Amino acid sequence: STRRYVIAFLASMAFQIPVFSQQIKFEKLELEVLDEKVKDIVNTNAQVEVLIEGLRWTEGPLWVESEKMLLFSEIPSNTVYKWTEAKGMELYLNPSGYTESAAAATREPGSNGLLLDTKGNLVLCQHGDRQMGRMNSSLKSPKPNYVTLVNSYDKSKLNSPNDAVYHSNGDLFFTDPPYGLPSQNDTDPAKELDFNGVFVFKKDAFDVASGLNFFKSFSLLHILWVIWLLDMLQQLIPV
Image (tube, rainbow, N blue to C red; front, side):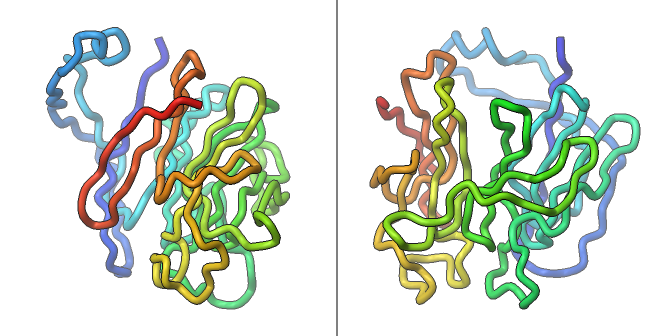
């Protein structure tokens, strides 16, 4: 079966120059099993393999089976990195989320969530550009050139797309919290929408949703709600 890689993200909100370590080590995985069904999809005897340390703030891990590579965003540095077993970590895309020439006003300008569309193209939640974008090049020859998929709702700019998933029918769902704005909250002067929603090219006022994924049956949308600096909650919402 396909090996599953896990990155241990040691994130810091400080902006010191990162010192990367790629010395692979293992840590024990401890699981509290609340439902025995989890054992159908998770090996409870697995170990966590720490691949990279010293990154500042990372999100959006995406395993690309066709290339045997792991892609992930480092948001403060506006970069997508790739990891392969053969070469370890390498630069993949820069810029990844903010492409203007002027200095970014936010401390989180880079891409966040990453996913593949039905044709195998890389799609990015782009904080700085405040849009869902598609990389306009192949996975084998990445270039920081992007096609805008959606960047506004009702003539107002999106906040900062954070995470996304494709439904089996091709619809693109994505969350749009304010975390990529300069002040990262609802009072930011750059914020044009008066809500934080989940979109499928239509408004879903689900407050500050951050992460989402479809269950295998596509009958439920699993939304990870984030209460900034306080706690994380999970809910199941029919769609």
